[in-house]
Length: 172
Image (cartoon, rainbow, N blue to C red; front, side):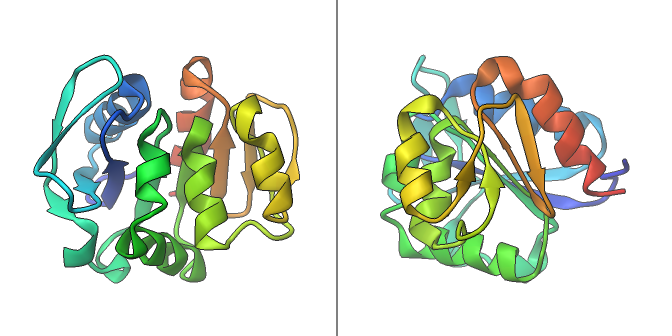
């Protein structure tokens, strides 16, 4: 379960769910990963739903998936903006094609749906976007955490401990 020296993206945009960005980012850094906060490019800094700022390290149009080992897609209202960014969607598609670990929580599933990578995949999410994910071809279940090959999904902030345990296992 070592991420020492791994480079991992945590996506951010306005009104991200604060815990769903910072819990994974800090947990990954604590475990030895190099974490980059990556935005859609609309701003150099984004505010979370509860006001905590996240200064981006890079924008999605300035990076290549081949330079990274994994990606975290948080929820909140940010995914509604992230899914409108073609560089963000292409980054997620490239990570999926390369079978690199992808962690997605809460409303983050909207990004997966817009990236077109859900057909036939077993996932979970916040209940409110269940139908969106099913319509994108996913097999949706209501569980704390779901692992489908290199994709880990969870429903809400309460699921973060189990979510991160499973995401970290993908680097074993």
